[in-house]
Image 1 (cartoon, one colour):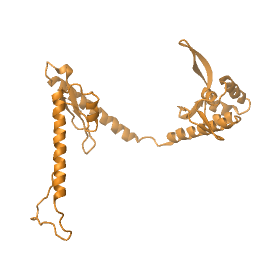
Image 2: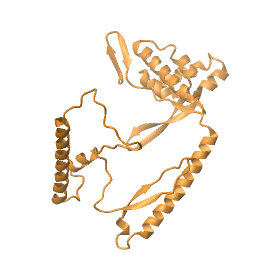
Image 3: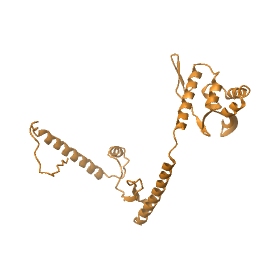
Image 4: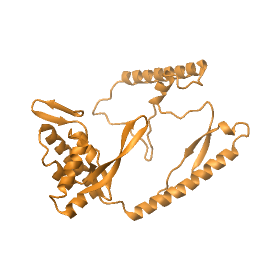
Length: 261
C-alpha cells in the first residue's frame, strides 16, 4: 500500500491523514478511511450502515453524517457517490474491528491527527479588541499607502511615468499608529538587493541592465576595499602590545573616544 513501509516487525505510516473541520468538529471521510486501510469504499459504507442497527440513533447521527463526493471517471467526467463525514468517536467505533499491523499503524496515525487538530481548536481565540485594532490600523495604513502611491505617480515625469518604479516606506510610531508613508522613485540604474543576494544575482545574469564597465567598476571597488582592510589588519598586527600593567592613556573629562574602521 502506498505510504506504508515495513521495517522488521514494525509498520511505519509515512503519510498523514487529511482531516477537516465541520461546524467546529474534526472529521475524516469514509472514502479516506477506505483508501488508507486498503478496503473498498462500498465495504466501508456497508459497515457504517450496519452500525445504525447496533448503536443508539443519536450517537449514529452525530458521528456519521451522510455526504456526497465527486468520483473521477476519466475523460473529464465525474459522478456523485455517497460517503460519510466521520468524527473521532465514529472513527474509533468503525475501525475497532480492523486488524493487522498496517491497520494498527493507521489507527495510531489517525488518532494522532485528531489530537493535533483538536488541540488547535482548543487554543484561545484572539482578543476581539486586538482584532479591531489590527483592522483599524490596516485600514489607516491602506489609505495612506494609496495616497502615497497616487502622489508619487502624479508627480512623475510625463514621459516615463508608465515605467516608473517606486520604493514604498511604511512604518508605525511608538503608539502603534501607522506613520505617513513615503514613495520614492527608483531609477532604472538602481536596485534593491541584500549583500548576500547581490553576488548570486550578478553571477546568474539576472541583473541584465549592468554594462561591462559597471561590472568592472564594481569589481574594482570591492578589490580596493578588501586591500584596504587587509592593510589595516597588517598595521594593527604590527603594533607592539602594551604591557598589561600599563594604564590606558588618560583623557580630559567629558572626552568621547571613538574608533573607526
